[in-house]
Length: 283
Image 1 (cartoon, rainbow, N blue to C red):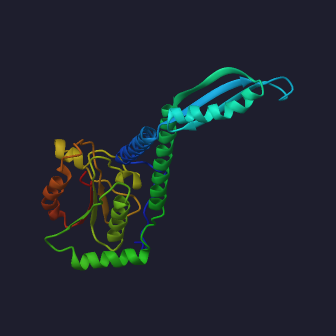
Image 2: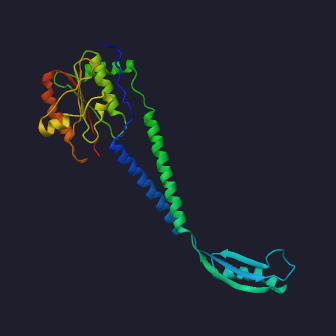
């Protein structure tokens, strides 16, 4: 029996569908926030008026085009026109010919462009926030063997009794490592000589079976649905068995996992094993 239990690593990283849904929700919220801010900024932009006029200058005054455009913007159309007319008078006194008389028009923000910029900025910020959160979660490392053995000893001394053999591992959000911790504890208990049964109680996204390369068949969900169940054993771990999640599909608002574990607790009491179970969070 090994004194330092190891946790089988999955061959490739898998993403919980619930996590994908949460990521999509964050990106949609970021997109909506960016669009809302762009629309609000465009609507709150102060109204401006641009006045323009064009004159044709006499020959020899300017090189190139003789057409000169004069323009000025202001919050009042009459003020904008008056400013252009004031710029126009010196040229008229030099015998310049008026091409377009001064006129004012409203200058509005480019709503389509602002929405595109706001939406893109929102998506980029949302993606950056998700990337930072994911990187922080990836930085979490398994417990060191010494700390793991110490935790198991404390649980055996203060938590497990003849009447209480179930340890439920829960988390508030997906991706916080409840499955990894449950697998570590189960293997560590088995390495200490304790008969241990690891139960995957997350019906929404069961994946503990992947950590030990076991099939997700005849699991906890199948037991609740049709009474068919089978315990899987990892070939290199003694005193250890796992009960996969199975194929039962439940609503995110239901609490069938907790009810199932309460019922199974009494049923598995007779086997004398320590039960380590993961339970999906309440949404």
